[in-house]
Length: 311
Image (cartoon, rainbow, N blue to C red; front, top):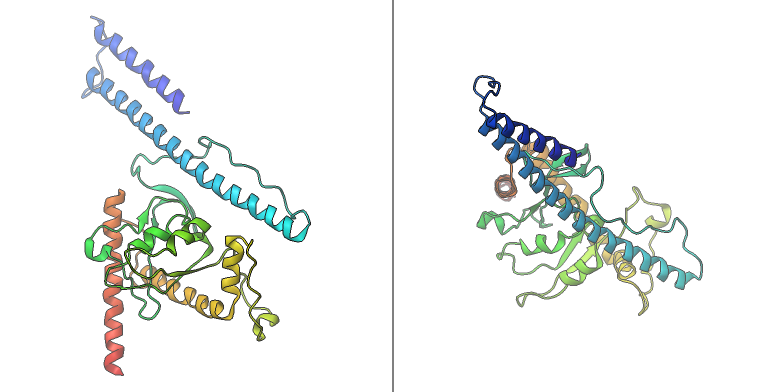
């Protein structure tokens, strides 16, 4: 499709050049000139080149992520087969294919945005993140002070957003004891990196779901039960994380994730009425998100102050 457009515009440029060289060339419509029309078509060709380069770069990035997920899935299947002695159920995962896909898109109006899967279907958008403190439900982001939020990216998923989100925590927060994240943020490499001490501060402990959590609880889950045995020395990172969440302490702590982060985004969308960015470009969108989270914090601080006065 892009190649055919290039060919079409090249032919039109050649035709316009020939028309300009011809002494008896037919006049153009009022307001149109041959040089301006040639420049417009050359500009379109250049923009198509830029779009092609961006799409190819995004395809390489996607292939790298999909290949890492494929290799992790293969290792997990092999470990499961060694443990059980049985062939894992389900289809054998296929390695990802390289190169751009037919549905890959590039937005000429806002090139830095991406098509992402949302609750309302696929949309041209950005990926906004927020870390929330459990007790106060405030967003302790350093970007609110620095004015350059890194909490908005063009990444279509959250697999690589754990470390940037932690790095954006305000220096006012002296230490982080535990970090509760859903399965979208989980990757073994990110957890290992996040649990290392940085700048002399104690390393946080990550609690992450390694898969989709079923809604509701079974009767067995309601009954008191002992913690499962510690995983063996040959346990995978995913098995270790699953055990961490299966303990009584892990279940109690992780139960606070949903009731902490979900109300914050609900307030931003419903109470503040923020459901879409009004600006274009990653820099401007990050500034806009900084203002939104700042407005949320001010609203939250007002309610916290009112509650303290009432007490």
